[in-house]
Image (cartoon, rainbow, N blue to C red; front, side, top):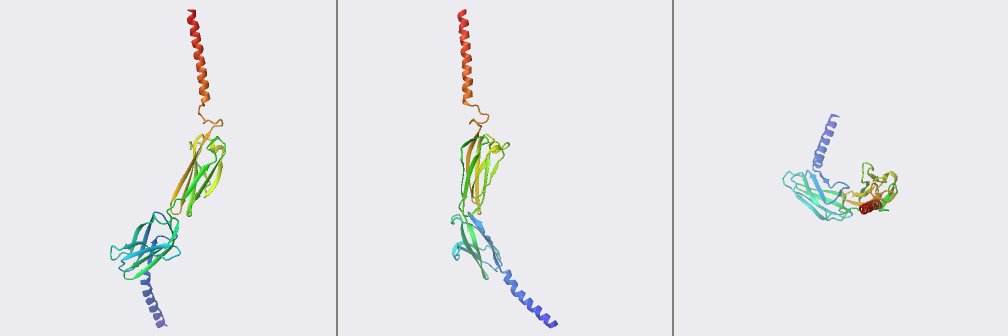
Length: 257
């Protein structure tokens, strides 16, 4: 029994000696990440335990085919190098397309590591926002319509900012990729120019902004606190009448003398 145990122990030890070098020599693609989204630049980072690694030569292609087009060839700067890293300009890549990335590390041995489903997107979302009226009186309804289009859309944020955020705080629109929303009553109680903004961002970090402005006035069509032209004309007319009466009185008084 003891001899059997010793034999089993020796076999296990031999197996571990064979497996450990295989594990230690593993090559891993740290970046780009699985299901990663990139815009403008993309970090390629490969770690390896290949002895005397000379380079990591990386290629790419659209998903569905082998990675055959040269992406970057990262050469070593020391004989014991284990990390091969480089920032690659991908600004010219087709927007929102999915790629395969393969890196081959050569040295004492050769190892290949691949990544599929890497999205490179250099296209900003297309956004729009509009209001059904350019001017409304206080506490009257106004409806906003917005849309954001992007094959890789992540989030949209819509806001309405009043001219007096203390009295009328910023309103957050229920912004999805598209929709409408009507506001009224206390939300439009602040006279002046309001600004509606929609910001859309995709998974790669590209963003775009659209804005629309509308004016809130008092019920008579004038801004609250704004003096109307009629009031100025009325005061001017009264002033001239007073001046004319004074002049007539002075003329009559001078004739009597």
